[in-house]
Image 1 (cartoon, rainbow, N blue to C red):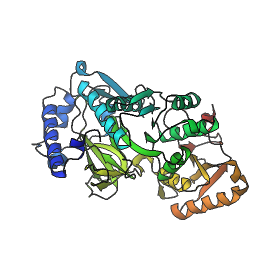
Image 2 (image 1 turned 45 degrees about the horizontal axis):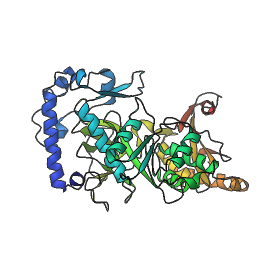
Image 3 (image 1 turned 90 degrees about the vertical axis):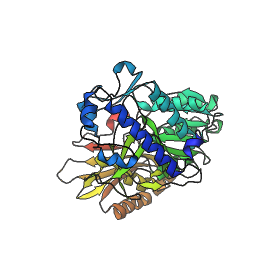
Image 4 (image 1 turned 60 degrees about the vertical axis):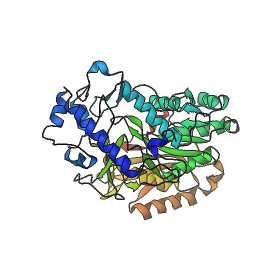
Length: 437
């Protein structure tokens, strides 16, 4: 553990710390000169403990757009030392400011996540997340340095070059999107350098991915590789909000001394008990420049509770089922892309590459899944595998899915950014065609 004195706090002491930090946060925000915070807290009574949190209204993504660019800052702009941003649906990016304390916090929480995944000061950590306004690269980079590891700021792209770096610098940890982690393993195998690479663990986030995809990544890197999930979002801090530990995969330890979680009904906003699926809501207890109160993430998960073989006492959240906004309605049936991915990648004859096409060329929406065989030896069995996939999807989803099963390498690879998995088809142009250029 990176901070065992915090990460093993008994639940009662953790709850007390959360209350103290929430109370201090509200006091700071009440003292802010920002008009946004004056309005946000208008009419809110005393906030003395974490039980008082539901008295505060939710924060939505639209508020970032309405307050663009810096209206949500709780400190003067001159106190900000860094700005990150994510792309916005309205053409305006979501701007997030950090002061010096926030940058230090960014390093701390990511170091804790790296340690949970198996990272140590003796590691060489290859950071293949994108650098720049996107929070991924710099967040994990600062975490790796705080951990005391050798940090390789490779960024995204150029898989051939990165495979050489992985081998030549002796990387033992890999930080990358799950899709790029698999892409690098495929490239290493193609270049004959897989045996030269000594990776033993990886931390993979920024994209939704399933247990089936985890198995594909671990198999591709040799079986002893631990692929762990990482969660974050720019509006809260970036990566470092929660991560799996390698001793107990399947749930993510949320760093709830900094980020307090709630689960609410996505439709009503009413709180849900631990164990029930709902929308994750987060409050930043220690952010200074741009905190958020009860931010509705739109991510669907559940609280799994505390207690873990690794010794951490923070609660865990389940791996994400999808996003409220990503749900597809196909012939009246609700389908999450993550569910389709899980069903496809359960099949050992399928590689980790896939695409989902929502065909809207007619009034009756059709669903298409494109996958590829894991290796060329399976080509004679194509028809058998195809029929098995179609039946598995239909039996589970209760909706017909057209499956296109290509040869190995037939699905376009992406070397930069988050992998695009869901495409919408509105005319006769193949929506995946753009990935080929």
